Image 1 (cartoon, rainbow, N blue to C red):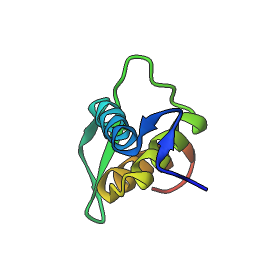
Image 2: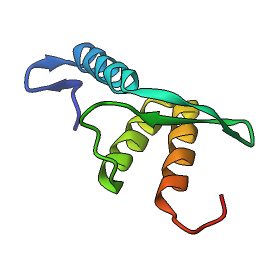
Image 3: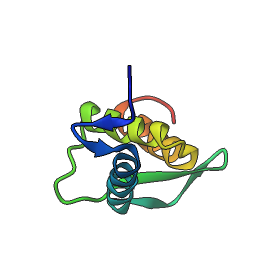
Length: 90
């Protein structure tokens, strides 16, 4: 049973913290200059401490999916896909 509170924190505050965290995450991304495929603009992380690994990719994609941000999800996925699959036609 979920009563809209976690450890004494109201649901509205949890939502606010989630939106703020997602905004911070998105501030660490930028559009990949000049790379658009099938109308999808590539997006990639630029944070100095970004881990370009599958685990980090999963966190970015899960956050975008959770927030319903299809543009960011698609752009990040395209960048991740092309970075991950070597010797594969893009």
